[in-house]
Image 1 (cartoon, helix red, strand yellow):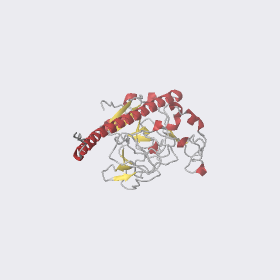
Image 2 (image 1 turned 90 degrees about the vertical axis):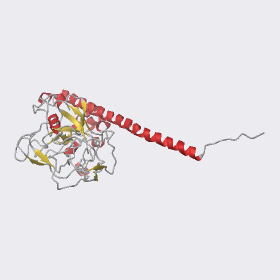
Image 3 (image 1 turned 180 degrees about the vertical axis):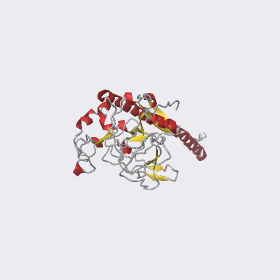
Image 4 (image 1 turned 135 degrees about the vertical axis):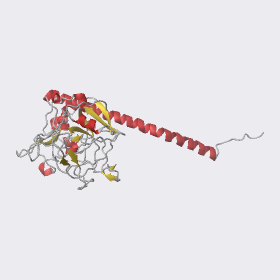
Length: 343
C-alpha cells in the first residue's frame, strides 16, 4: 500500500504569508495610533472642560476669576499667600482636590531652597502630579524633549522638568499685552486685556466682548525651549498696537531654570501660568522671558494642527495653528469691542 504524501508549506509560501501579515500590521498600526491619539485628545479636551467649570465655580464663590498669581512687592511679606502661588492651586477645591488644598500651609515662605522653606512645604502640594493639569498627548521624561526650533534651524532639547513640582499643560489667557505686573517702572498702567494676570480680579461682567468670544485657557508643551531674554516692547501706546519681540541674543534654550509648564502650583515664572495671544498657536516665533514679568509664550500642543482652548463661557474648541492672527488677538481680549466671527 502506497504511503500518503504529506505536503507542508514551502519556504516561498511561508515568506509570502509573513509578508502579507507585515503589510496588514503596517496598514493597521497608523489606525491604532490615530485611535489612541483621538482618545488622548478627548481626555485633554475633557480636562480643559473641567478646569473651565472649576474656574466658573471659583467665580461663583469669590466673585472673580482667580489671578494668574499673587505677588506682593516691597511689603516684606514672603508667604505662599502672596508670593506667586498660581491659579491652579486656588481652584483645587473645585476639582476634587480639597484634601490637597486644605493641606497647604498658606503662610509657608517662598523661595527655591529647603533653607527658605520652599521645598520643605509640609503639605507637599507643589509636588503632586495631578492628571487634571496634564494632557496625555504630551509625554514627559526626565531628560527633556527634543523640539524643532520655530525658525526651522533644527532641533533643540528642551529643559528637563523640575522634579520638585507637579507640571502642567494648561495655562491662562494673559491677552495681548505681554506683561504680568500691574504697572511697569515708569508707572504706566498695565494694559492687561486677557482673563488672568498678576493680582487680577476679572469678573464675568468685565468680559464685555462676550464669554463665547474670549479665551480663558489653552495648552503649552512642558519643557518647550525659550530664549532667555525679555520680550522687547515697542510701538504705539495701545494694547493691541504694541509690538513685542524676542531678541536674537540670550539664546539659552536648554536652561533647566525656566521650563515651560513647570508648575501648576508656583507661578514665579510666567510660562507656568499664562500664554499670550500676541503670537498665534504653535507659533514659528520664539518664546522668551528672562525675568518674572515680561512674558511672550505661544499656546502650543502636541496635537496635530493646533491647540485646544477653553472659552470664558466654559466651552472647549480647537484653534487651528493657521488661524488669522487678528482673530486670535481678538479672542485674547475680553473688552476690545471687536467682533470675532467664524474661526
